[in-house]
Length: 162
Image (cartoon, rainbow, N blue to C red; front, side):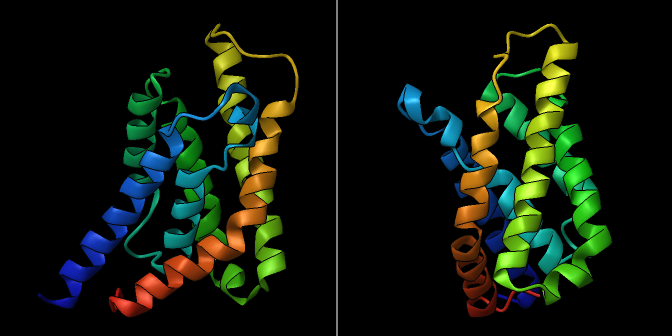
């Protein structure tokens, strides 16, 4: 198996796991705390492999999230494409940041992601809550980011993904 095949299946596998974690049933009280798994995996791979995981990849991942979530088609696709664009624009800086600084960036980007999807749901007249508790998910994403980063980096290095 050559290096290119390793890169392909490892990246796809991490996204499949992120999709599964994004739809795993949680108790009602924990729904607002759900980390943004797909966005975090997208941020990591766009930062680590900017020439391979880009805006088009984010668009397709967002469409899959829309299908899994049962939401308006294109809602998550637009938001993830914007997150990928920001990550690609800053990927060289993000690599130099400490894990605390990266967590702050992940907090801002997943918060932006959640706000964009919330605003698009409001614009589409879908039922949304009027409270801001949905922004607790980005906090848990930022908290988990150092471990997600280390796990994905070990996978990338272990399988020689380039």
